[in-house]
Image (cartoon, rainbow, N blue to C red):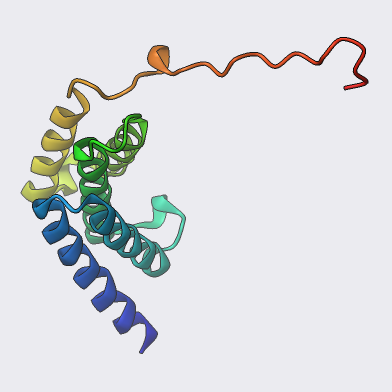
Length: 141
């Protein structure tokens, strides 16, 4: 069935992405992790408030590893994408009531919070501003 195919694809692409991440092939890691995230969202939907704990754990794990991928990739100068993935993982994990949280989930939350403190992640005050664009004198625009 389509659901079973999506589950298998999400898991295998996540595992392949981890292998590429460990070997430093960040482009291939990113491709596989993003495909895994796509599959998980197809399975769980876009409304995060309806996710069960397993869906939260899986999606947060993919987000964390995508953050790792963007952070470690020296070709990516702007680390805001890493920050975005870490923050989304944290938001998902924080959405689980503490009494319902499994140990694995709490450990991941702690790990993601540590990664959010890494040097080099952009913060709101550090975002580059685009130069102002002024119309040429005499131009109608």
